[in-house]
Amino acid sequence: MATSVSTSSLPPTADAVVRAYTERHGVPPAVLARAPGRVNLIGEHTDYNDGFVLPAAIDRDTWIAAGPRDDLQVDALALDESGAEDHFALSATPPHFPGGGWRDHVRGTLAQLVPSMPRPVGLNLVISGDVPMGAGLSSSASLALALLRAAQQIAGDTALTGKQLARLAQQAENRFVGCQCGIMDQLASAEGKPAHALLIDCRSLETKPVSLPEGTTLLIAHSRVKRGLVDSAYNERRAQCEEAARALGVPALRDATLEMLAGVQLEDKVFRRARHIISENTRVLEATEALQAGDLPRLGELMKQSHVSMRDDFEITVPAVDQLAALLQDVVGDEGGARMTGGGFGGCCIALLKKELVPKALEALERGYRSPEGLPALVYLCEAGPGAQAEAWPFSGEAAGTIAK
Image (tube, helix red, strand yellow):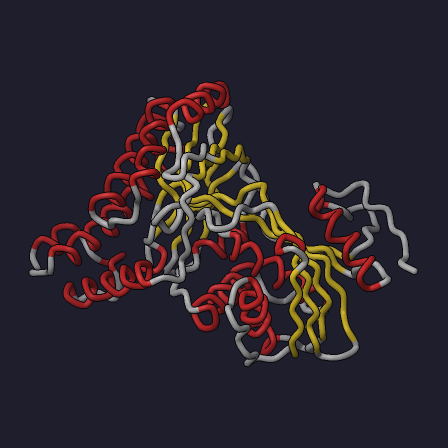
């Protein structure tokens, strides 16, 4: 018979994983972990070029209820995948799951943590979340950071910092899942701060919280055009950026200038890829200054320039996303900004706008947008939230339960 513990203080998704864990294993979980998705205000594809990005963790999370096992096995249940399961031995070199998917993210992420565990321990995991998948909001990074926080707490090892955990999560994507992503998604999920964006130097991994203007909110509009990072188009662009850096004689495009680019002979496509990265890095730093000064018109102009550069130079937008961005830019005017966000080839647009403009934006999207399949945009109103956390369950003590607030 399962032990009963009150979950009334938990958000619905957290409540669901605790209840499912207790029903499955007959005891409550030992740890409850959460990690947010993220939205990138500006700075697209600059992270793997050692550049600058300006994301914000959002109040959409992956939640994991976890407990230790007596063996070195992992039992994972994914509530959002129709109750799909995975069972494997905890190892630094686990086999891939045929077909990959969420199971490979779990296997690859835990594999990166094993060498640093003072005492490797098997895990029971129940996973669920409300970060939209395939939307460019980093559901995979959210899953990885929640896993790492949960496993770290159970193993009794809290020595690894958020930056170190973000690096492990990135390595799982690069080495196991097969996506050559940068570290922005993982670091934003690890170190997010309420009411702030996070300026990240992707070379030094230094982060700087940047306050979002009072009275603004984040509106994320999903085009309903599905996308995936593990495809040839993403990795091809990374290779083109590296080719441009070699031609320019710099370690990464972060070290290049537009003047340097004008002085070398490159294939047109490679030239345009490099021009996007170099100019985007400048836009990130200028957007940070605009936010700090409360200069929403300047921020909006920079976000519009970023979208044009992604469309024309980096070629990662699609017509549906271009239409979404234009609709949002018209509504926002000079009181914020809008652009595509995420890796591209579908997915979402982000708008930072005054809260009083939200009804007008929703009406414009309902009237003016349909996906290629005739579907309306999916809209998420978000606030910037805290980074990944794990806490012993059931909560106890005066400071307990901060993870659920």
